[in-house]
Length: 329
Image (cartoon, rainbow, N blue to C red):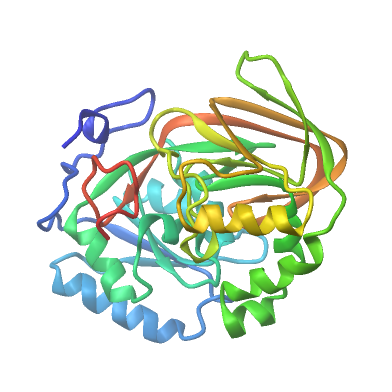
């Protein structure tokens, strides 16, 4: 067990329960924050989760539903105030990201029960889709204290992006995602492959700014995209910094080489430059689509990210010391 996984860091409280991998812990108080618009069989989910927690000897959880006015932040905050030690979140990436603001800086651990189509954080945690298995992950006691990114006052756990990736997410229909899953993003990406590059200036910490012609700039806390594609293999969620990928393909051949290099996990990926830092400012020559953890946000000419170290506790299925959150799942 690594020191950073258990110790007190900054203003973040250390959970009263000893974090470990393997073996059950508890019983703990828990709350389930659920997005009824994303969970089609809510009554069945509730029955399954309640039964799984009861089998582990945990008390029945509180259940809080998100609303159009409050997509998860207020519910997560109320759960913490009520004494929840584990907060299960069932919904898409947007629901999970909204809950981060209510959990950041607290001793409560986030446990993700995937229910959307992208499920970026779940992909990077190596979490199963089956809610019973998701409950078992939380009960087993694997915990990881990770950094969060902040952009325009909003928190994210996975990745912020400007340019191509955000444009693809914005153009991918919900019906197509529901029908074919992550493949929908691949289909939606084709019309954007030949778009006009953006002229960007990228400043990382106190380093001199870099000026590039780029198709996308991604700031990642962890390395996996939709479908488990590992774009940033060296990204670590608890090192106080984030990896910055500048993608600069100029034609279809460049895209193909870049894609295969990523898929084959080659050490060097052509047309991709990677930086690392705690404060990242990306400025474009014109407004660009932007995204946070797979959610499209307002277009702008700037993407500014600041790291909030050790801001969140996660329930994870692998050893706390593994650099890759999904490894061993």
